[in-house]
Image: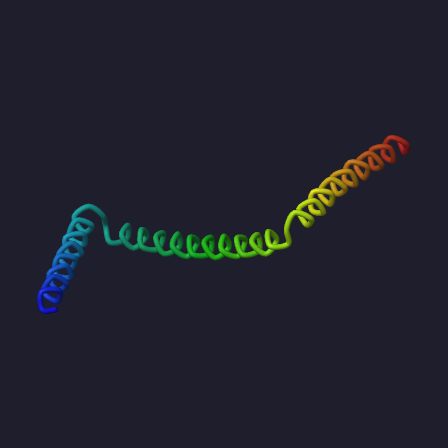
Length: 103
């Protein structure tokens, strides 16, 4: 266990040096305003990524609940989509006919 502890401490010490070096490089390369802007952008992208992951997880959960319903449900869902499209086409046609009739 002492060897493991030593390796872990060395790892974190090297990570701190890497972090210190990163800050030095940033300060040499960018203005403080630019660094601040980059941090804000990173935070925003991070929160958007988190939200996207949560949405994906919810969609996967929803999909798995549909998959549990089996083949019969898939057939019903396909028929529903087909009927929905047919209704949309007929609604559009009726609207076009009504507009042409009024003209």
